[in-house]
Structure formats: structure tokens, C-alpha cells
Image (cartoon, rainbow, N blue to C red; front, side):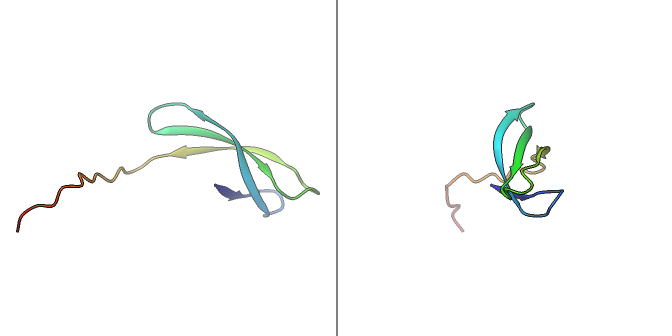
Length: 59
């Protein structure tokens, strides 16, 4: 997953993911721009979980 660097607005990649809870993770990211190379952390939270059973109901 790519995100945007808050310093230079280039693409940044996730280099580490640490799960805090079942619905929250902390991502460590690094800018892909070699002139910037900033590192930063993001909090990723799941706000909704779609449920699909795979079974079709009869009409």
C-alpha cells in the first residue's frame, strides 16, 4: 500500500506494521523520494467490516 509523504507529497511505502488491537494498526512508512526519505507513522483503523456468507438466499 502506498501513501503520500507529509513532507514532499511523493509516494511513500509501508515498511512495518504493528497490530495494536484487532481493529487498529500502526504503520511505519518511508518516503520513496531519495531526496527526502522521511519516515513517519500512521494509525490505521478499521471502521466497518463487510460480512458475506457466500450463500445465496432463495427468492
